[in-house]
Length: 342
Image (tube, rainbow, N blue to C red; front, side, top):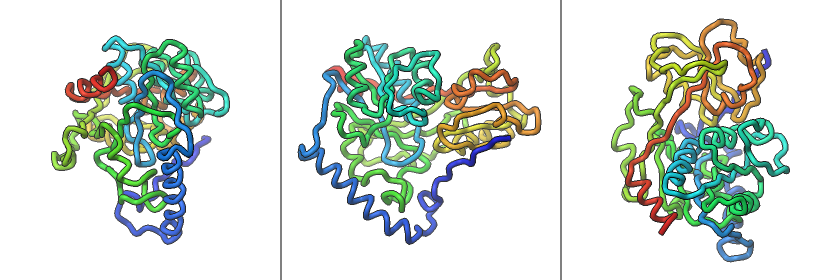
């Protein structure tokens, strides 16, 4: 079996253990580089470009997964319901040819366009453009008829001028130890969060037995901080056929596959529902081959929807995708749409 090791988050970021000396020594270098970059954009030494239509950037200060893709999908659907024509700009992490801009189609290969952009395109049927140059991607979307651009990730891509920023946080991890990389998980200093119009807290799945306590989501500024829950949809067999309720797997053992920023989040969600999990964590954006699923037993295989888009050509039975849908308070959408369409 060909198996790549999972990328591990440094333990000291979130578990309170001592930060290694080498990480503490490198952090001031990283801090200086990021501060200089922000200074150049803030004072006009480096140019920002606006595509001429409203731009909404979804991102995070913490390295790793936080739930940006489900929020992007939900936002695109809400914008469309409001009568707008949204498009999504993405770098396309994990694709092999980063230098070639591409439109993401239903038949696109995740190797060429990236797994997250392909998932967004499949779920929303909206225009998605992948390009390392997000300014060029936003302009291409505007020229293609989109009247609002949603940038999936890109909080730190300052060259693209934006109208609204949304910070997404995993409520269980928050900012970790609060330090900049590599001593901590922060891509930018904590004060950068104040620039974001909205902070969305990913609470996870509401049906789980692990309850997030109210004090975990308390904030001094409730108008800027919004809870997001992820509802699990019908489990989809990749070989075709009708969807299956996730409850059908309760009391069973399954192989759980996750090649995302935080695989344990997916495994915990299944365990919370009474499913026996045999975990298989792969690196984020891993390119799957059939041999990756030779686990030595014929248990059902449950995987995230992001992983499943990279396995559409497989004929191996037993593979299932577990889709999720983001839900936020109606007041959040009202406040957000008021800023997009004043």
